[in-house]
Image 1 (cartoon, rainbow, N blue to C red):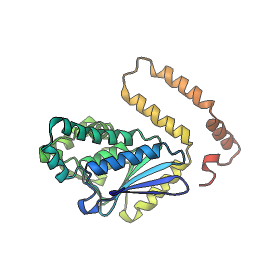
Image 2 (tube, one colour):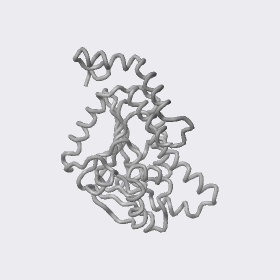
Image 3 (cartoon, rainbow, N blue to C red):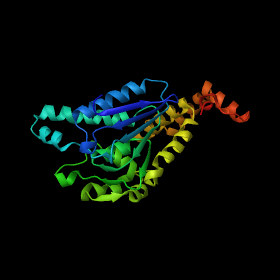
Image 4 (cartoon, rainbow, N blue to C red):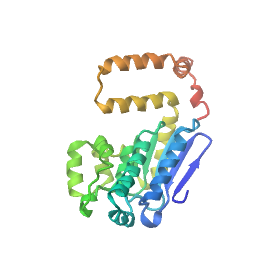
Length: 262
């Protein structure tokens, strides 16, 4: 992979690093394809426990590469739509990734970079991070990332920041729900490590099913009363080997097997 760095350790912690620091990790069609391919491959790897997403250098991601977008402006309608579909597919793959995902926001996140943050399960930002949904200042709109961003920050905050394109700091990002925690820049790796330990304590299958539960609840088009299908879901989960091990470990005052090496 040319623009994406992938590292994996023995505990199943994977770090994906956007690696175009010379353009603040802005993404073009090639990087989008690399991210999507890596996520799809990792989704099938049962050894993966946690996915960390960050950026090389001083920035997290400046969003879409302007040179790529300038080229796209000259595409025909079908080519332009295929290009946009590729970005939408990558964002959806990140959103639906079956293991916990953490955005490690080490610096500026603009436009589509904010979308990446919002599509992750958890986001921890450096106090130096700055954010902007800057598309309107380029005559564009945050269309593809909008479902993920609005899900994170809500309609009210989205109205302001989609329309103004203004920059906001990490503490504001925390207040509106875009990130969960802000850390001193030098402390960011330690805070991420602490979070990873919390995530490794959870049952892998339970985490996967929890993400599926949240996605289903988010759809809001159930023909069936959620109380009915959620009752069946917990009944099924209780009968799993992982649940039996987790309950036994708790009663025996020991770590469950999935956390024994942590």
